[in-house]
Amino acid sequence: MVRRAILPMTLASRPSGSSPSATLRLRIDKSALASNWRALDRLSGTAKTGAAIKADCYGLGVDACLPTLREAGAERFFVAHWSEVAGAAQHVAADSISVLHGPITPADAAYAQQSGAIPTINSPHQAQVWNAAGGGVCDLMVDTGINRLGVAISELSSSEIATLNVRTLMSHLACADEDVTMNRAQLERLRAAAQKISHKELSLANSAGIALGADFALHLTRPGLALYGGIAREELSQHIAQTAYPEAAIIQTREILAGDSIGYNAEFTATQTVRVGTVSLGYADGFLRSWGQGGAYLMAGESRLPLLGKISMDMVVVDLSAAPNLGEGDWVSLPYFLPDAAQQSTLSQYELLTILGQRWR
Image (cartoon, rainbow, N blue to C red; front, side):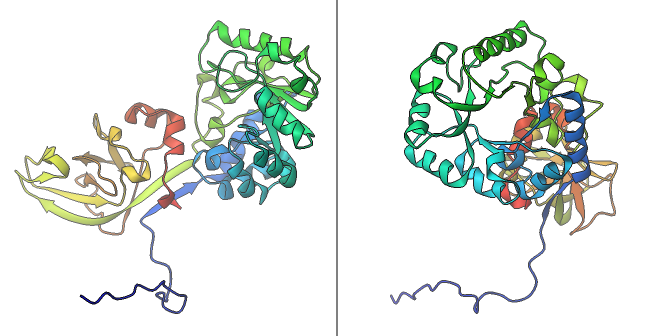
């Protein structure tokens, strides 16, 4: 058998013409995003208000969101991974970006020195790595009870930690979305830590922490979820607006008869004739099968389109009875007001944002 060589597609051999039409789109309400930041800034009182932009701005896109946050007034930004620095640095100065996971290796520290991004030191080991690379300004995470990252308060007097040039001494609340005594205990532990090491400012409050009141704002707050439309505490509900609006196209319509089934495992069987639409949306796009429980639906304007059968990787089928004029190429929307969507899908508001797949771009 003769095998043909498979040659790479060159620019000359690529199809010409306009880009193919998308069947997924994610509308970001930038005015709502800016308004959310300004509301959180007001609620932060005299404290400065930063912005958590990790995980590609919680799944909504750094390029779409970061310029809006910058123009709204944010001056400090927080990512988790070193790989997130380059994208953010296209929009803001590198020294305004704090990397929360810190320098684990000498290569990490060298990248921080070269890029100008600020490492967050989480352990004596990371402090050694940073000092060995020449040191400089850093942030320092102290653990006050969440037991994820952060140096223990007892480690603050160690030689590796004590010699750091700390800009922001920070910690992270474990239960800010609840009214529990642990919130105040963590605040007091951070204040105790502040007596043990030189620093320029203190930071504790995330989105929910801002709603706990002025005591928790300290010098710098670090909202994340609420910027993008999440409401972790009821006190924020009157201040935070929906930011993300996912929409998907109908790619086929058909009429099914009584006795016809839909999708994998034939979980839905029609009891009467019904017109249905196949929508370009599935669990690969973050529309997980957990949405399919308990009467889930998509929206066409104000009309609900019930889901029929299992959610597939790239497709879902809906009942078009409430919107008989919809056809192929028309758009439907996900009900994505995050508190309601969390109840419907059983996913957390954080998950609903960060699992949105790349095809939304």
